[in-house]
Length: 201
Image (cartoon, rainbow, N blue to C red):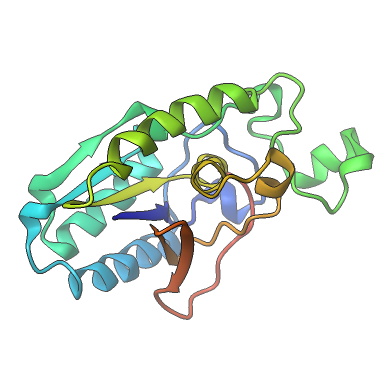
């Protein structure tokens, strides 16, 4: 079974600044979100040997994964997988939503997912994330937690559910919830009543 988690809030998320492959540290809220997710898993991991925790190589995801691993007793089961890294958004990385809306007013109030003119194409993102998904979806005897990002997490769920790029654009990306990908569904489990930022990355 596959469990999908987005990293906790970062300084860029707090400032509504798009990250892409740029990294920024978790905020105090982000650390608490990661801890809440870890506690949620701690109540479900009864046999650590059947669990694996896969993290994107970016620092914000690795920090979140380490917090979850410690809380859930999975420190020995944590691995880093490049295929879970966030989408590149090219020249948009580091810009705030306000800056991008001034630059591209036609996108005001809309998700910026997959709109960057020089970002990673859908086919590339779906290919690498889909390869990871195919590897773990064929392991019904295992549970795997994927700690990833807003964009990559949308792509992962879209590939699993057979959604289009436009449908993926509308998916939520909470930082204090877990998605279970099982039996053709993506069910959301909220971990704690903490606020989440909507900024990408």
